[in-house]
Image 1 (cartoon, rainbow over the protein chains, first blue to last red):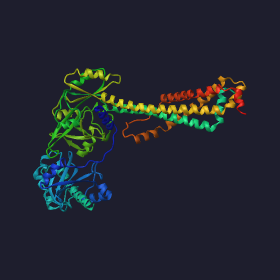
Image 2 (image 1 turned 90 degrees about the vertical axis):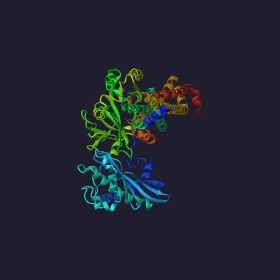
Image 3 (image 1 turned 180 degrees about the horizontal axis):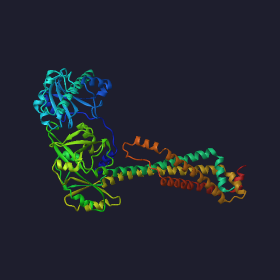
Image 4 (image 1 turned 30 degrees about the vertical axis):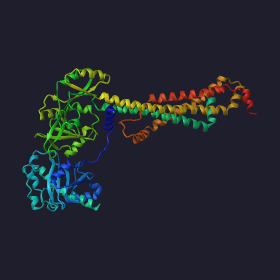
Length: 206
Length: 394
């Protein structure tokens, strides 16, 4: 039987299939939700993608708001996003949403923890490959994002890393001589803010 | 006019019957040739796919996990090492065609998740590994150069997770060395999708494992006895042998079961053809009862009548078999597409492999079975008494 299973597995491996793009999920949602919202009593997970919500029109709208185009092999219209809606009994007390972002030495997974009014409550870099990863994953760095909203990032230009509100301008790069990953994080935060609003609106419209 | 010409003209006299009989035999021949071709093509494709996996035998240090999944389940621990000198020892064996040395390494990455996570790397020999894994195809780029020490190749999912494209840089946990992405593999559905490949020497150097290996992939010569060679390998100290030959044998036994079913269907097609011919020719003999009687009264011997009917049968079968073979060749691609549509898992390559041998065998078999089917009607025709046959007209 074992041999049979092994053979079937091998057969299925020999016959390759195609799969969709990779998303960005919390590694341990139960633990992470409790960590960010200790008062939570539960959460719901929704999977959304730009192509299913509005296709090319929505993509253009997102790119316009972001001030940059989706680019590369992995930042595509069909990337599935995971939105965690956090509950305390029946009341929504917040959201958690993460996105993948290309960094200098590897992929970044940037999660934002939101209050119901979409103010950033916390920042969490689940994965980061960088020579200065320790600083960029530090609590001090994360705390800088607390209280920021999309309004703060509205005029931030990810291409030039210029603009944004005073609060955004005040964000400190722990490693000023190497700002590639810092800029990537700011782009990820702005993209996260844009997408979260769209996904929540779509969810409420349902 | 000889008997052959008479038989030929007899067939032409009843064009509709001849047409339908030939069509029936043709369909049987078509089914037979396609099934035999599928039988061979499927087996060949599966064999090629298994051979394309490269290694028939993997040699590892005793107790060392050789699959990334097992290694992850063990939390990246439990790796055991063999000295690199073992490669030379194994290469000496006359059964060995090629070997490829590998080092699997699991490194704790503190920046992966809340509490860190394990990343797995595979150090490979750029000279031998690509050759032994020909099924690995690239979405972008290619394998690193033979002498490269600072290039990296990513499996499909590893590249997605790391958001890497060719030319991008990567660093390994605990190391400041920058590696350039030389290639990104297409999805394979195997553990290679999540793998990060480095030149063997570079991985050994980065993680301080110089002169050490975790695996040695071995490809045997075609004529080599895998079982005997495995016994030889067990004589080496502290190694375990993971044989793909066992897996291959299991798959082939599954294929053999399928083969029996396919051949049974082919045999039924065969019987249908035979009884179809027997029925048609017998009906034709009964219809021509008086005609045969007149032929005999004019001096035709029983052996002449027997030959005439048998030649008619042989002509019908040969024509049907020839058209059946032509049809099976012409529609092989369409048949293959239909099979691929309905079968969930099919190996790569030609699923229907019709060659001269199959065509000749099918032609001979259909012709022979048709002739066998024609013997009884021919004997009945030869036994017709002229007087009785002519009287039957009244």
